[in-house]
View (cartoon, one colour):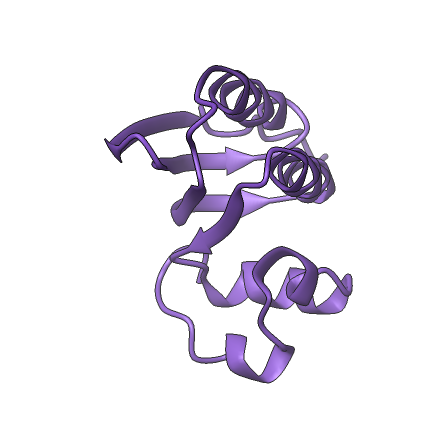
Length: 125
């Protein structure tokens, strides 16, 4: 008999080295039960920080990203675009890059063609 494995808790660490930059480090699973936390955190910051120009999401601590996680990354992209904020997905691992490539969202989310993403480092590898 197989059982359902619960996702690992999601921990978000936000830092703002200056008023124009926000960094969000994602630790744990970005999945159905946790993805909304990332969207909520980013949406509040985009609304509150009108001078924000760059949003860096550090994926190096992300263990898993399922379709709900991907959906939230796409929603974050849409909200960042609406606020004239550049989205950067930093520290992407091979599995995340593969998911983005297979779903055709790699260039949309990162601005990189698939062949460039193969040289990414750490996270979800």
